[in-house]
Structures are given as C-alpha cells and as structure tokens.
Amino acid sequence: MFRSFTCAMVTLLLALFLLPALADEAFDITGECSFFRAGNRQKTTAAKMTDQNYNTYAEFAARQSFEIDAGGFDIGALYLSFYDRPVPLYVEGLVDGVWVKSEEGGQFLQEYLTLPEGSTRARVTSLSRSRLWIAEIRVFTPGDRPKDCAQWHIGGKADLMLVSCHPDDELLWFGGLLPTYAGERKLEVQNVIAVPSTPIRKQELLNALWHCGVTRYPFYMDLSDTRADTMSNQYWRWGYLVVPRLIAEAVRRYQPDVVVTHATDGEYGHPGHRVVADAVLQAVPEAAAEDKWTESAERYGTWQVQKLYLHKWPENQIHLDWHVPLKAFGGKDSFDVAKEAFRFHKSQISGGWMMEEGGEQDNAFFGLVFSMVGEDERGDDFMENILPDSYLVTEDAEEGYDEETDELEAPKVNLPVRQVPQNP
Image (cartoon, rainbow, N blue to C red; front, side):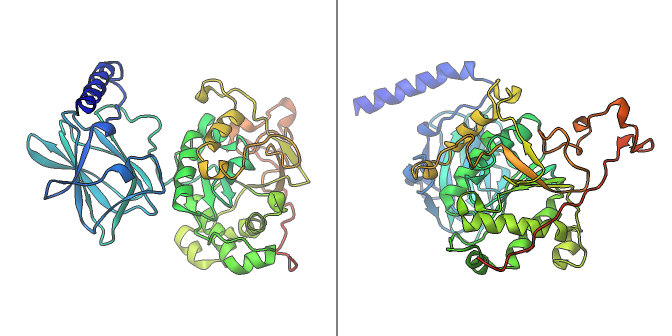
C-alpha cells in the first residue's frame, strides 16, 4: 500500500514539474485517471483500452456513457482509437459542477477530441444503437495537440493518389513516396487501400501514414482479405467488375492528377497486387468516361487523370531519389522516415517483412504508363509537367506556350493501357 502511494506521488510530482516546461503541448495523464461507468460510480476496467494493444478493447452498451476522473488534473482532450469501426459519440467536460458538451466524434478510427476549458472530469457518450468498442484511450491536460495524435480529414481534390493492396504495401513497394510528397512537399496525397484486413492493421496503417505526414484519411475499398492461387481466381473472389468500379469511384471522388500503383507482376507474384494494378489500368480511362459506372459519375462527375505510374513498369522509367534530406523531418531522408513508419506495422514485422532498398523490387523505380501532359524528361518526379515548379522553362520552351494561361502546354501522349488478361 505504501509503495503504491509513493509511486503515485512521485508520478504526480514529476508531472507537475514537467508541466511548466511542456506548457505548450498537452501532457499525457492517462496513468493518473480512473474510469467509471456513468450513473453508478462503479469503476470500469481500463486495462483493455490503456494497454497499448489494438487487439484488446473495452466494450460499452449502446448509448452508454463512461466518465474519466484525472485525480485533480484538468482534462484538455481525449484521444480515442475505436476497435473495428468508428461509432458516433460526443464528449463533455465537468466545469464548475456542470456538464458542458464539447465535440462530437465517430467519423474516423482515431480522433482527438477537445474538452471545454476548466474540465475537471470528462464523459464520453455513445450516440449509436450498436455497442461501443474502444481499443485505446489517452487523456491529456490542456495544451497543444501532441504531434503523435492524428487529426484526420476527408480531403477534396488530391494531387496524387496511391492505390495499394494491403496496409504496409504503401511503404514496402513505394519507398519514400509518402514522406516526400505528403510530408515534405505538403501535397494532397490520397491513399486507397484495397484490403483493410484486420482491425489492428487498420490502426497500424493510420499510425504509419501520420508519421509520414499524411493527413487525409485513407479510402478503404473493403475487399475481403483472401488470397487466391492465380490472378483470375483473385478477380473471381473480389469481382471482375467490383475492383475497377471502386477504383474509378475513388478517382472521381478525389480527382488526382497523378495515380501510382503496384507492379503488374504483383511485385513477388501476389495475385492481389496484380489485380489492383490491372484494375487501375482499367479504371483510369473509365473514370473519364460518362457511360462507365454511371452511379459514381452522377455523384462525383467524371475525371481525367493526367499521369499514371506503375511500380517497375519497364517503359518510360523514372527513378526517385529517396535520400534527399527533408526539412520537414529534421534532415532525415525519405527512406529513413519510411523505415520508421514501417515499424508501426508491428504485425507484419513479426512476420519477417522489412523495408528494403534496391534489388529486383527496387521501390524507387516506376514507369509512366499513361500521360495527358507529355513524357517525362527529367525522370525524377511524379509531378513533372503537373505543378508549375516542375516545368523546366528555358529560352527554347517558347513553342507550346499559352500567353493567356501563362503556362506551358505539353503535348498529349496517350500511352497504351492493358486490358484484363483472360489467363491466370
């Protein structure tokens, strides 16, 4: 008893000592908190939502509330991680003995929700008729949102769309793409994931994306996590029409200028990767056609992608330098940042997967498959001929210059797009 009391006092004094130094950033006080099921003051187990394990969760009945007492600290914010799906809810703070409603949540799997100033307790109330499962919760003092707490948003038009099969593929086969284009260059990068897989892999994906500087919430195609023995059988399991339809819908919804995806050989022959690459090849031209997938065309309109790249495509190849120091990451290069992000995919690291550089699967080599803005000349940037600062404007570039738009008009080049093969 004395030892527990002493440990608690040391923790409290340490927190009080650190608070002035960290006054600008909210301080994690989860360890000082008690959790109660609202109404009966009966303590509820917090172990399953404070054990840093996304595979465990605390369960609450439909429309049930639970309260948080921070042991004398004011509560500034809660960081919630839902188990398998977001559930509509709202948070309240107890201010001068009165419960004051603050923010509503339930849109994303991870959410940072602030409380009213002066909140001595917090309350979370479910608005859903289904059960509320919380995998993790962190409680913070008032202050700025900590950098490792994501604040997601649903993006509008994207600059670049990365279509990958599973969580972790966005790093394994595309190297420093995300740190370079989302983190450093602050472009709007939309991730599209074919197979969300398990709840823990969804959480791992979000942590990895956020570490790379991605702030747009990923688009999940929600295909089943099954692996067939051939590409044709994988198409049969997912649906020959389902996969290109969903990708075309994502293209129309997010309107990317550039799309990047897997190699046609599935990197190491993975049928799911092969199907995703092949479906992207179909979906890009179909997204621009009014008579294809009319439901999404009516909802979002059609969209013409300007450039399409595939990993390891053998023609019109470009090489990305993942070793340029990035200011946004304190001088680290994009490959190092990607390797750090990959560590969040703990379930895959335990299976032996790791980030590799060079070799047959070099994640720095891509090929331009389709272009509406001309072929790449420098061959070192997905956004060449797309963004104004990507043009190489010289005295010899007057031909094709449009005085009214003050832009260069690159010649349109329609490179071949493959159709779905009939054999495995």
